Image 1 (cartoon, helix red, strand yellow):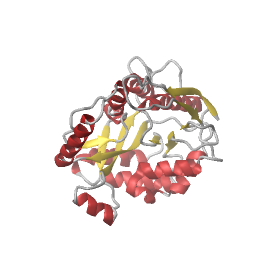
Image 2 (cartoon, helix red, strand yellow; image 1 turned 120 degrees about the vertical axis):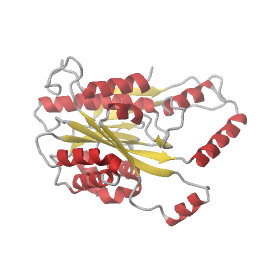
Image 3 (cartoon, helix red, strand yellow; image 1 turned 120 degrees about the horizontal axis):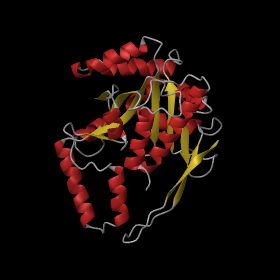
Image 4 (tube, helix red, strand yellow; image 1 turned 135 degrees about the horizontal axis):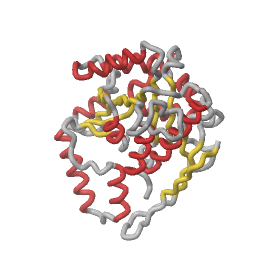
Length: 316
């Protein structure tokens, strides 16, 4: 169950009035005996208000049924709850599974909602209607306060696990990876209110070097407001989007609960949380051959993704 990597969140607190706790993050294989409830909660968080459409019980069991693919992050030993999860599921091998079928139909539905995403819709429709090229569904979620530095090792491990599986003739050779992620939208007024609130808060306390470093890591160095006002919950999303052939931001199908809608209308509470999908083709990188998933020497999109995340967000 134990894996190679261990990451320590150990930062110098000098110059700050904030007490810091050193935490060791252990990277472990998903454990069917203890991880079910925590993984199901992470899936519910990932899919937001639309989570009930995806048969989370069955999806959690499918994830736990892959003994050598995917990783969790824990801090209190193998018997504790995971704080993060990264794995990949073959959408073609499991195309009749109720959760995978629901996710495929959901993605097609969201991609058909706007004319600007028609190309994504046609691409997904083609991929889902044939059997030669397989799509890997990437599932990545964690508690909101998990440092982004924990994410690059997860992807590096997943890359190695997928290649080891392919070498054993297991069905993990993918032509595309489909990422499902979370975002939130801020109107200009909401962003102005948030900026003013942060400025007032900063004025009342000292801003230590450690807190500044953490803020820069969490926002991925993006200070400018996106044109559409949509921000990722996952700081690594922009790096994935750069490699993706298609990216779609969408609103959830399920409406907000009445109370949350009322408070949002009064600008008092709640984020406008939305979803995002990114389709990333697995292609050989420069000077690699077409058998990129089958040889140690070949390089492809898996390598580029893992290296990009490590260079941008990895612990230094």
